[in-house]
Length: 374
Ligand code: PMP
Image (cartoon, rainbow, N blue to C red; front, side, top):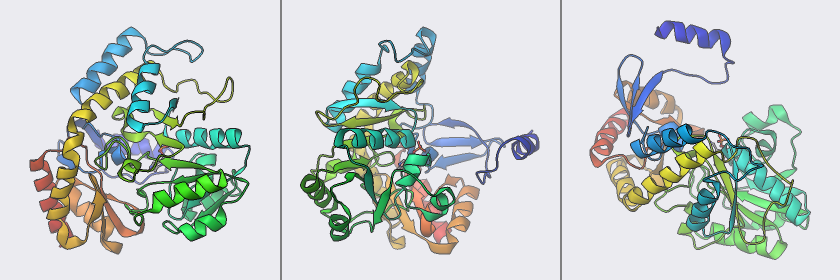
């Protein structure tokens, strides 16, 4: 059975990923592979399953909506779409939302919105930043290995060192439509910028008329202990992009923008984006996160304290540990001992477990990770 599926994968699926374990079931912070082995999931589908795997409230919301109406064209009022938009406006503090199917596509929307409302063409983004793999989102993504084979990319984008406000001020000019920033860089290995960084970006954008676009695809939906990581700083962005944890694994993304910044008739759209089932999953997810959010900083602290000997850095349940070349081996050892962790860029071990992970599960995971790190 297992062999068959791996052979089928090799024969029929394009080999864009390197895969090892075959996960067949999930519940809370646990997943099971096809051999019945249980794991504590500190990857959560790369920050997606924030409410844990198959949270009963999310499953029920999906099933109830699927029985009622699975799809409705955006040419009509979609039953629960405005309700979700209202919730996203409440939790971001911004004014209006627009839906997509993924994080990359939310950033594509932000690129279009920034261009059309500013009448400008270029963007500035940061070294090691990741915003997606569609052509537009790849154009603002720095990682050379994934972008260079596809160059030239559009829109034009200048990259400056993450954290360097002088370089940013230099790079932003009268044709800069927007500055894209992750408040904590996720794919780069959980890199936290210096204090005052987002405030500095806000000032440079205000001075130049460029829009400040905060990519909260990985940091958002409670991951860092607030709904959004920018909320630790007191800064209000012009546009926030969201996906991953928004609907507990059901595909949906969103951009939320400040007052006056909106798509007008015919300027943007997508067949599936913000469909009824995805909106139901997202509304249920927000309800669950509301309940667990106050616990996120304390749970993050248990990880940080337990792994203190290994120089962890992080905020809430988004933690990186500099491991170096041994990272894949540590990941493997952890998996063999029942804990899934992830190697992000530059040998950084990344922990992004479900927000519902229990204290006991954290203690167990910390023990395994600590032993694997040696
Ligand atoms: N932005 C950030 C910060 C991300 O981490 C990711 C995914 N790793 C994306 C955008 C792209 O999201 P998606 O894979 O849903 O397109």
